[in-house]
Amino acid sequence: MRIIYLGTPQLATIPLAALAQMPDIEIVAVITQPDRPSGRGRQLTPPPVKVMAQALGIATILQPETLKDDAVVAQIAALQPDMGVVAAYGEILRKNVLAIPRLGYLNIHPSLLPLHRGPAPVTSAILAGDDDVGVSVMCLGSKMDAGPILAQHRRPMPSDARAGALTEELFHVGAQMLCAVIMPYAAGTLTPTPQDDSQASYIGLLSRDDGRIDWQQSATQIERMIRAYDPWPGTHTTALGQPLRILQASLTHVSGTHTAGSVIDGADGVTVVCGQGALLLQQVQPAGGKAMAAGDWRRGLRTLPVLGDTPHPVG
Image (cartoon, rainbow, N blue to C red):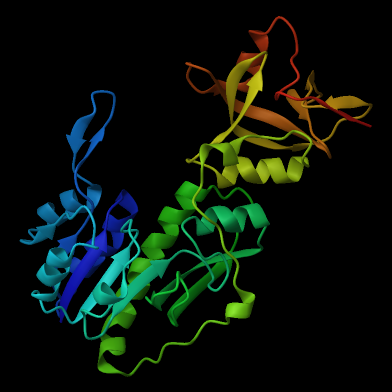
């Protein structure tokens, strides 16, 4: 079966490597984003999927600026693919591109669809405090993450789950699921199950502002933010007018009346009072510095700050 593969970041190399091991599949082309400037030197750097495709010996690697170019669409159509596989490519496919493979496209989405459609599903699940997490293999359609489902894997949400590591883990599971369903689906022996749109939830593109901590929120929600926004955009605040990233914290409690955002020397260590409850800081990163234990950061302070720009009194 002739496959075209569309993907760009490191995560997308996982299904590509798995598909390349299947004996009945020929990856006739990999389509990925163009090389981009990266790092302090802004050196032109190929996307991870291109690097993987070269290592696998895939002869045709396309890097169009956009799939809206009719010449590019014609080039893909000339490959005569039976099926496409999409994993974090970076551009929504239009109808003329979707119509090229006779069997359509399959996609790995690390959520229990229809929950958490959109580009950051694991982040969304952690923020929501979901009891379970999972990954779906679905048929791609014109509506984002709304296509019928071929396979789904569910597992309990780890209490310490962080979005980056959990997403990678789910992509490994999803890659094996993809390999298990691709041939039965092509043969017509596996029927996709439509999603229930009435149960759908969504998350949009993340921005740096999403990680700004409002200390009037509950400690539970802020602790989820710290894990959900790892590695991007991270959770951040200010301390004595300087940026401070909060890398790791756990729930605790304090007695008495304090201002939300107040840093105090708690019984177990450096503690921040929240709108409800408190957080025990474990690892932070000051502006221009390296990650450090919260206790080491505290010892460098002359005064205990109130974190954030606008203090809120809390009873």
